[in-house]
Amino acid sequence: MHKIENKDYQEVYYKKVLDNGLNVILFYKPNFHNNFFSLMTPYGAGDYKQKDDQGNVYHLPPGVAHFLEHRMFDYKGIDVMEKLTSLGASSNASTSYDMTQYYFGTTKNDFKKPLKLLLDFVFDLTIPPETVEKEKGIIIEELMMYENMPDFKLYFNALKGLYKYLPYNQDLGGSVESVTNTTLEDLELAYKLNYHPSQMFLVGTVNSQVEETFAFIEDHFKDKDFPFFVKLKRDFEDEPATVALKYAETYMDINMAKVSVGYKFVHPYTKQRDIDKAEWLLKIFFEQLFSSVNDNYQTWLDDKVINDYFDIDISLDPKIGHFIASGENDQVKEFSEFVEDVVKNYNNHISEEKFEQIKNKYIGKAILAFEQPSTMALIYGRNIVTGSDLFEGLEDLKALKYTQMQTFVESLDLLSNKSVYVIKANNK
Image (cartoon, rainbow, N blue to C red):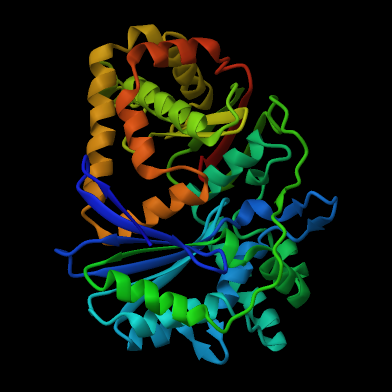
């Protein structure tokens, strides 16, 4: 057990890699009432096509990670969520493109029973064959619910318009077809390939019993054997700089058209730490352009070019990234021209003062997250799963300079590859 004291942020946490490879990180929060644990695997909705270094290829139906997450909560005839509730813990799980996580929180000081159940059901898959078909109906109903929610539909179809090969062209839960085609064997294979302790992380925030908790976790695994693990990587074709679809539209029962204007661009970074810094620079850049720190923002609201729905999404992968401007505007062409005009003339909207103001806001929000046990564990966990370090990243954020942003933005071709997705109102 390795103790780490971060004096800059007044955080104390402990790390240990167990004999089976599981990475355990416990934050010591003596003044907090809640205890929280999250168990994570770097297997998400974006990993349905995988391969190993020996050339073995594993292509499973899109949405299989989300399907598996659903079935994990039926453990040997026990409804895990109900059982955790009876133990005084609130629980949930989530699947993103990069990871799946299972977590619970409790105000009870004795959290060993819910922790044991978390470790039991995640590391011991039991799926009764008859439950797979039943679960398909539940997941398809969930997919249809999201399909009828304009905001979700807008965002995920914006991603589909941008990406040809990367997994963002598939919804997190897959499609009706892929879910229908998922078999018990697919779920068991996905689990076997990706739920191994040597690539997983258990992150907790506890108000006491640090050494006792480590001992409890180690004792839990003492009689459990795990097979040899072969690490996999994604198996997708190289993503082109061009968009997959330049324009698409649909109609829904809404009052005003919802528009996403997405732009895809290349960048030079492949290492996660460099990607994280570049993403921070772009977030600060676009916030100077399209938030209330811009002197024109209120005018845009008054002129109904944008409203409170307006949003900018930025995301970077190795060598490729995107930004998506989303808004409500029946004048699609004018909205698209507005976004491009602001970006083209960005020098009129940025300054070192604004850069520092926004940077300090992000730093403050990150430090405030340390005051919530669940947020602390989840954010730290998300970082380590994707190969980042939360505290290292904060220091990188603090060190960013206005001139770095200028140089990076000047190196990018932000506007050449555009995809527009529109949801129009049925009654117009």
